[in-house]
Amino acid sequence: MPEVLTSNVADVALIFEGGGMRASYTSAVVATLLAEGIHVDWVAGISAGASNLANYLARDGARARRSFVEFAADPRFGNWGSFLRGQGLFNAAYIYEQTSAPDQALPYDFATFAANPARLRIGAFECDTGRGVTWTRDDIAALPDLMRRVRASSTMPVIMPPVRLDGHVYVDGALAGNGGIALDAAKADGFTRFFVVLTQERGYVKRPTSAPAVYRTWFRRYPAVAEALRVRHTNYNRTREELFDLERSGDALLFVPDRMPVSNSTRDVALLRASHEAGLAQSRREVPRWREFLGLG
Image (cartoon, rainbow, N blue to C red; front, side, top):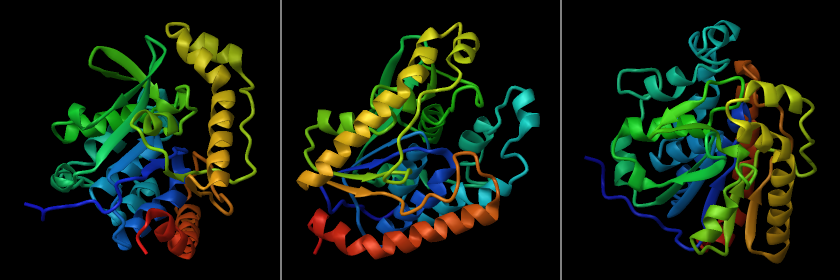
């Protein structure tokens, strides 16, 4: 059995943004928080941010790195062949649900996750109702419950097949009204101070989709998905602006990549490794201000 685990930050919400393989950079934040013994008691993540959340709560910085760096070289990670077979350009069933078992490529320490007292929030988008959903520990009794939800939260539309769970169909939580950054969930739980790990540079502004008609055709069974994709840029940019306002008022600490060297679909392990190393360098440089904001001295 794992040792008794405790949290040492209770008045700040930790929020991980998604971004596919851009999490090669922000998984370094997970590793640095854990190396510094910083254990936040409320954590939210959407899409790739849900993977960062899961690894943070299992207190496994090495797995956080492997998930977004070396694992990309796995021949079953996904490609156009797996896409044509209906498994997705990223083979999500393999990536999230198979590899986490004890004898697989990315074994997950569910016992430590279960012993961690921190509250969690994982966001996804419900295709058939058009609403964002948030899962908590109450929804997770075993490893498959966790990984199925992390997979659902991370299911990028079109390039990954939707996930069926509890009678509904889900895709990436980034399609919800928060644009993929779970600030709304933190505020709903009463938080007024936030540590938010972003995956785009400070000057980034999301543009409207260039193919709304394609999405309407692709998701004709789920028109709410097409509509969410059409307005996602507005929701995302609005949430980012709110975060910058909170930063200016001193109520938010933002980790913003100095330079994001990879895209959400980068597969080159050398580039992903360099991205993670850059994230580590920035994280280590910023630790003093993290500690000050979190009241850890």
